[in-house]
Length: 334
Picture 1 (cartoon, helix red, strand yellow):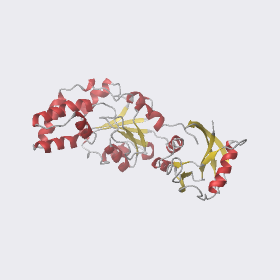
Picture 2 (tube, helix red, strand yellow; picture 1 turned 90 degrees about the vertical axis):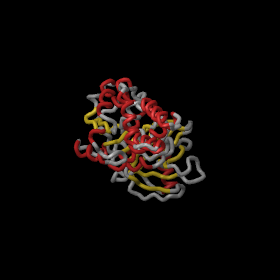
Picture 3 (spheres, rainbow, N blue to C red; picture 1 turned 135 degrees about the vertical axis):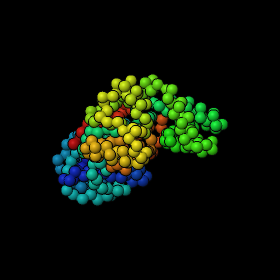
Picture 4 (cartoon, rainbow, N blue to C red; picture 1 turned 180 degrees about the vertical axis):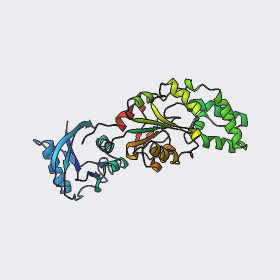
């Protein structure tokens, strides 16, 4: 198997060197840590020094191995090193030194992406996790659908279950507003009809999103819940799942904060619980969760199990709850 040496090259201030691949090459326009394939009778250290001089005219010191991985039929050897030099872009589209957290905003080549994320999410390490409820922890959408279908039947509206689910993935309130507008009735009538139907449902029987409870328990730190759902609907679910004591604080409908994507609730939580925004992440299943997180200055993680928001702006993306501990709390490399 061919081997590739790649360099996580740092300045004294902690910024890391990243390069954007030029057009016409494999993984064109994606970002990478610079390096190249080992030549015959060459070790990774010599190969990286040679590649950096050839491609960037950049000398490096203090090289050390920090990670080995296999991707796309190649074995990648990632070496950390230091430099005080100034790279010259000879083959790359762009070259720059960035603070670790800024690496989350770039699209990296497959082999480089886990390394970039591990560097970014250990500068500093996450300690505070703010969870959305509906669609993130609890699989409540399946329970919402019959209620919404009943509203549609009452007012002669025609929407399939898939259409209603897509509407819910924006927000519940927007869904109710749309149905009220289509029916030509006051919004409060539709809200009341929905609430009456939901009163008959036992939230203790609502299943969690598959794998999310196990993921949450595997993530040491402080956990908080932020939802527009009512407290009397949230608590039975948490009790049934044994999560009541896991969450340090719940923000619910009764707290009367402006609805997402407004950041008011998150900003209040940061101040009240004395949370460092750099150590805090908002985990949700919709774009409005990400927008609220960005506006509050915390990191964002999109848990998109239904693939409604592929490509949406977020710091970390996954469609598999079981990946959350590894993605958000990666092993430190530096």
